[in-house]
Length: 133
Image (cartoon, rainbow, N blue to C red; front, side, top):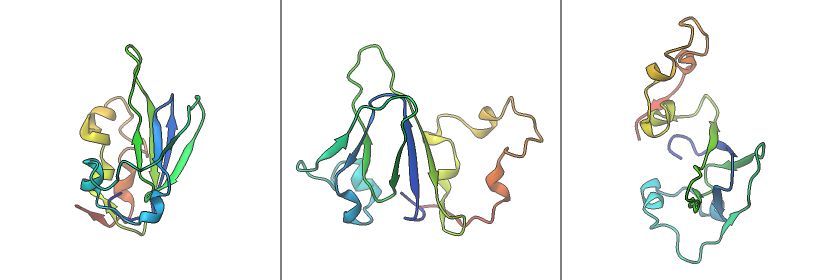
């Protein structure tokens, strides 16, 4: 997690799709680029997972290494929601303020919202320490 390590993620899988590396929180802060490439964990890593049903919730700390599980179905997409929570007073990665993976722009997502809706770009009114990592 870029920004503050004091971040909690909440995943609500809509199917069997997430695994957490057992004991990974004890490894401390790890370089995200090494994790994305798979270099920082070895073949002995135990991945814990469980099938999820609609309405289940998984909460974990930013130091818990996690991954999506392979979709082994031929005709079913894998869906999940996620949200991250951290203290407003701690640094925020600028990438966390945009739609995930830049698959859309905020203007597109807000296109049908009322222009005066208080949730439009709500974070812009917060005293955030935004950083580019």
